[in-house]
Image: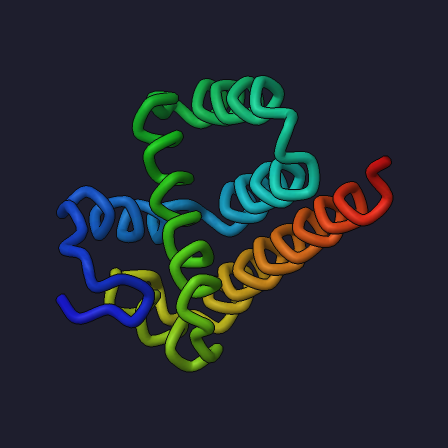
Length: 136
């Protein structure tokens, strides 16, 4: 499997996670992405993120462990895309290669996650730079 965001061979579980993402209905998908967005906006709130995933899993008859793994897999793409400065088209190709449903909504939401991860990273770097500049 040739991917733009990584040259590493990914475990089969990553592809399975993306295929499992397709099994969620629209409401479940939206809620899961909301949980992910909230975590990306407040990355220090790991405990709350894990609690929300556990609650989501319980509400929908899922196991929390596989759901956490799915979220880790979803975050692999934006992290790799950011490191390699990928275009939107390259990210879309990777998502389709991984088995993401080709619906515009699904791709649009995951591309939004990529943008949010990028913005979060840039803001973290800016805060770090500010701390370094104004440090006595």
